[in-house]
Image (cartoon, rainbow, N blue to C red; front, side, top):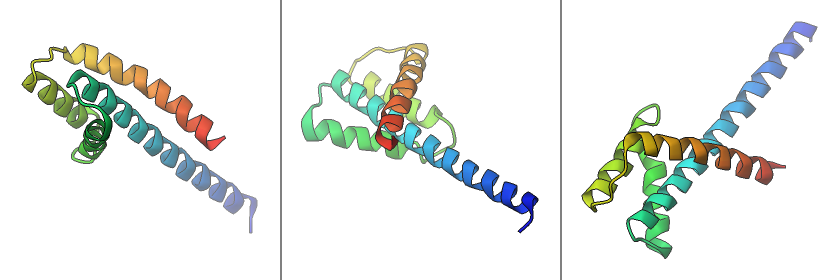
Length: 108
């Protein structure tokens, strides 16, 4: 095997690892957002966990974060909880960092 082939395999392995990490971080972030939103909706226990799973599942509808944000905003508005899109995007950004730390700790 040539050096080029070895380097190519190394880059492919790194890309695969990076994509798996990104998926885990995004799923964890969405779960954390779902748990936060569940609290705002007055849900707890199994209901909160189920709601958080529905937020994770909502991310598979379209690429990007808009599907998740739209679901949370719609659900909160339906219950009379007022939150701006800007505030929700800020919460998502904060939770991304938290999720990244949790996944790194779990992997390490």
